[in-house]
Structures are given as structure tokens and as C-alpha cells.
Image 1 (cartoon, rainbow, N blue to C red):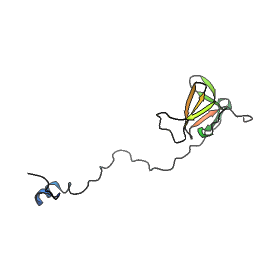
Image 2 (cartoon, rainbow, N blue to C red):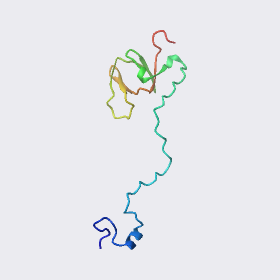
Image 3 (cartoon, helix red, strand yellow):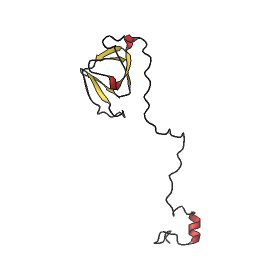
Image 4 (cartoon, one colour):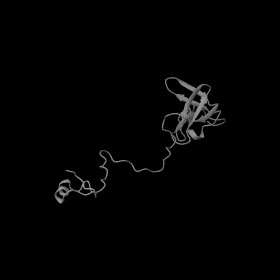
Length: 126
């Protein structure tokens, strides 16, 4: 015995009542469980942090990073890298459009346009 007739309905009214009409209309996707999603809004640009000690670098956005800037890389050891060139970013990280790779010799780092990086003060800045 077939559940559906050739015209897409049920074999009988009793069968349609049994299934409650769940096969007659397109079903809505189930409600999402858990925390509600944030509404998509335009990307908000984070404010720059306070400068603090300029010897540790002045914060700027990645889009403002230029060739010749000395990037301060803080990790286990304090390092500085003079940026000598940029190339478009082609890695696998989900970075914003406009991301690029900054090179200092063989050392490189991916920099997003609104990523905050620290550089040594330019020229007369201090």
C-alpha cells in the first residue's frame, strides 16, 4: 500500500489525519538551539589601545602599515622587523578583505586591515 497517491495526496482522509499534514507542505527548518546569533552588522573598527611605552611600539591599524616601518613583535623575546615589502595574503586564515603579508627578509606575518599592530615611532613621532 502506497503512502502517497500519484497526485501527491494521501490514500485516505484517515491517513492524512494520521500524518497530521506533515507531508503536504514544505517544512520549516527546526528552530536553532542555544544562544541566539548576533545580528549581522557592518564591521566595527576596534579603537586603538593607549600608546603606553613608545619603546614597545605605537599601535596602528594594519592598513596603515607601510614599507620601512619597524614592526615590534612581542612574544618570548622582544623583536623588531623592518618591513621591506608586502604581498597579497593567500593563506588559510579567515582574514578581512584587504589582508596582506608583510615581509622582513625571510620573516613574514599576515596583517588584516583592522588588525592592531605596533611599530616603532616613525620619524619624529614620540
